[in-house]
Amino acid sequence: MSKLFTPLQIKTVQLKNRITVSPMCQYSSVDGFANDWHLVHLGSRAVGGAGLIITEATAVSPEGRISPQDLGIWKDEHLEKLKQITSFMTAQGTVPGIQLAHAGRKASTNVPWAGRGKIAIENGGWEVVAPSAIAFADNYPMPVALDQKGIQKIINDFTMAAGRALQAGFKVIEIHAAHGYLIHEFLSPLSNQRTDAYAGSFNNRIRLLLEIIAGVQTVWPNNLPLLVRISATDWAEGGWDPEQSVELARILQQKGVDLIDVSSGGLVNYQQIAVGPAYQLPFASRIRKETGILTGTVGMITTATQAETILVNGDADLIIMARKVLREPYFPLRAAHELHANTDWPVQYERAKW
Image (cartoon, rainbow, N blue to C red; front, side, top):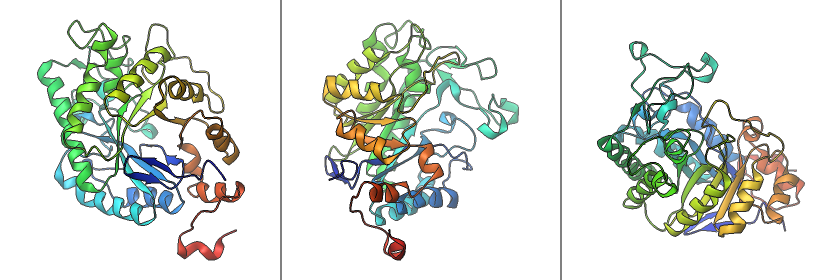
């Protein structure tokens, strides 16, 4: 029996297979609202047979957006369209998940196809915040270092967003602590040069993440999965590294986190990444084997056989796919055929089944 198409039970939620659609920003919102693009984009991957779909980085506050076109969940008015989307995904047998995010010092920037770089306040941008007043790059905004009041607002924003996510029908929450965004900025000494209780030692640098998790858990039911995405390494000397990732994973497991979504990089513009097929897999494998927590792996996983081998070897529990399912929304259906696994097709498409 195919491991890729073996269900995975996480608390009270069962994923019908181990294929997860990774959060991928669409930069297609106005004032944070989901629209028909998001319905069709996410809905087509649900029809395509993914076990879990996690929405793009969804901002917990307006100032937490990467760009003005980011998806958001900072007000109740955002929920109507999100409910339509989660309802459709659920009807296809896919578990709807949401990634809650704050962009930190990488906020107030242009969408990728407009060249990135900062958007000035007079042109519709906003003041950005970070653990320390260190810009990501010369063409990015200079952030304001958060004070205690600002940190508490961040925690409250994540907490409120988690409550709205539950109302919207999401069954999985992922907290975005990777890719150089706000929480990752606190984790890494390269971006966190504070002198208070949120910096310096390992325990201080993980403090914000733990406080956000504690806040989220006051509103998110303990029988529903809670995931955290991390960058396992900054790919830069003196930064966050795999050893710290393993230790963080141990602590997160104790705090009730169910799965670590293991990515890497994004913190500094001088990172040196050794890219290749499944290049991030060793990080997920190490975390899984040294801590026992469930892990998901992402990054240049492109074939059914590759994904199956990863699972059979015990290197990860979920295969989290991004660009592959942009190119091929129905990849899970084809993968099941290639691996001789039995999987349900939408009844409307059964006449086209292999």
